Length: 165
Image 1 (tube, helix red, strand yellow):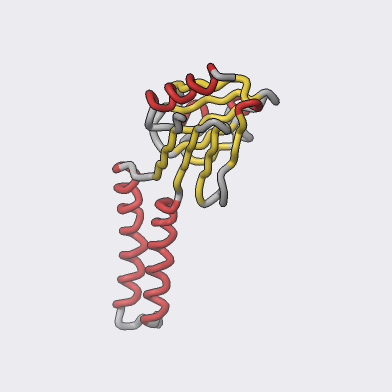
Image 2: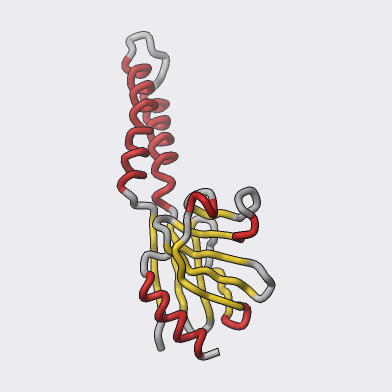
C-alpha cells in the first residue's frame, strides 16, 4: 500500500532574516527605556514585554502543514488552525493533479488562503513555501490546492489511487 506523508514548516531563510530584523527595533526601544535611569519600568514588565515580542515573532514557527495521501483519500492539517486532519475521500474528488502555481499571483501569498478576497475562482490554498501544489477539484465544484515540496512522490501516489477508482 503506497502512502504519501509530508510535513512542512515556515523555515525559509528570507523569512527568518526578516523576522530577525523585525525584532531589532522593538527590542532596542524596550532596552533603551528599561536602562534609562529615569525609567519607571520594572524588571518584570521588561521581561514580560520582551517575551511577548519574541513570542509574537516566533509564533509563525508553530505553523505546520501536514499532508497524507492513502487509500482513504487526501488528509491535510494546518496547525494551529486545524486541530485534526481534514479528510477528502476519493469519491469526493473529481480531479487531482500536481502542478506549478504562482503563490502570490493566484492566492495572495503563502499560508491558509480562502479565496474570499483574492481570485475567488481559484478556490482555497494551504501552503508554506514553494510553487508546487496538489490541485484538487471536488465533485461539488470547490477547489483546494495543498502545497508540496515532494512533486514526484505526490504525483506517483496520486496516479496509483486515481487509476484505481
